Image (cartoon, rainbow, N blue to C red; front, top):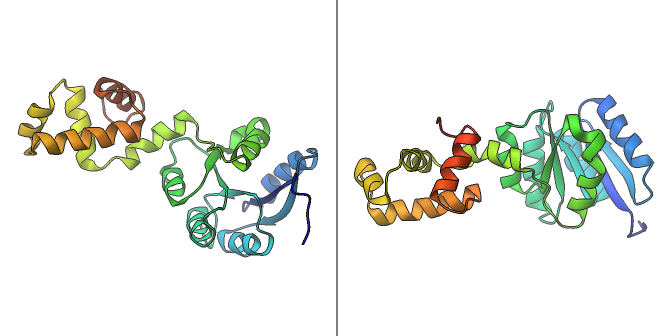
Length: 206
């Protein structure tokens, strides 16, 4: 099936027809993108993806029969180059973190579809990740291991690596390794910055 390579081919997956219609309406006005298919649940999403191989897929997370998270995992396992933007209703949706781990390229809050849908589709199509800081932070608590969260709490209490090791029965080297992992996951410059991010995003209590 030949198509204009300059046109971004989009698959919209949501169990609410009205939302799909809204997305279709926004895309219809754009000269550089076209809606090639729609699906109402995860199972249909996988079938439509296989049939149409869209450039960008918009995937609702909460759907009957098969969730968007399961569909995202299945599609990304079969097509590692798939570019999927998950749609969610609220920022602190832990499923978003799992979807991004499964291979999703980004997410979009449903209440900002009108304002951000087109820029998000173009960004993801261009190979960029569309993950805002809010959701990255909201889902960071889900990404940190229980042990890392305990270490982060001790950092916020002002303890040194050595003191944390004594408190948690870990070697200083083990603590250092976990601190390194925490900084990478939270995209933090240093220990203090990590503690500030964790408190601000509710991962640990102040």
